[in-house]
Image 1 (cartoon, rainbow, N blue to C red):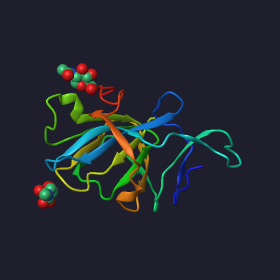
Image 2 (image 1 turned 45 degrees about the vertical axis):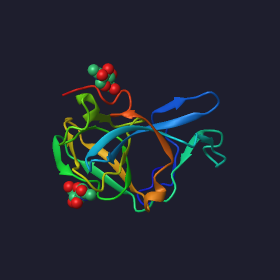
Image 3 (image 1 turned 135 degrees about the horizontal axis):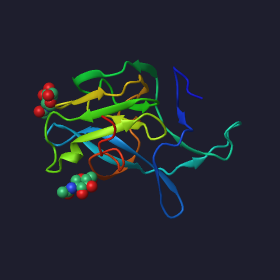
Length: 180
Ligand SMILES: *[C@@H]1O[C@H](CO)[C@@H](O)[C@H](O)[C@H]1NC(C)=O
Ligand SMILES: *[C@@H]1O[C@H](CO)[C@@H](O)[C@H](O)[C@H]1NC(C)=O
């Protein structure tokens, strides 16, 4: 299902939130805020999950990411420190295994828990890395196992899914300290 070169359609089900009649995907986004600082936000995509009519997944819930190209499969060794960096492109990152700890070099909120995210690889491992400008973020991978991710560059800002911001900081469940 995961192609190393092209992944327009996500049939995994990362963190999602149920509304009245529709189900919406949520994801932690790393953005550049109005002060030119990288900041974390919890996003809910405006388009609800739809139903696949494709052979093999007919009837299951899907979300279609537009304009994704040149996917990169990345194997990060245990206890790797990625340092302070900006997103190299507007991109979706799917963490498949391991653990990523994202922190910000600049305080963006009075609430310190808004300035860090713990992303566990797996079904909830969906992140949008969009801070191509600004102060950047620090990503470390503190687990004893490799962290495997797939980076999916967006072909421009029109590829960023329409969304509403649910709040400052990472989505629920990604702000608390897990492991060490
Ligand atoms: C800080 O943010 C977290 C996560 O959004 C929230 O659970 C907590 O209550 C907040 N703390 C304060 C003091 O507002
Ligand atoms: C935003 O920050 C980047 C990197 O720190 C810097 O190169 C750029 O000039 C800044 N832009 C503005 C409008 O301040």
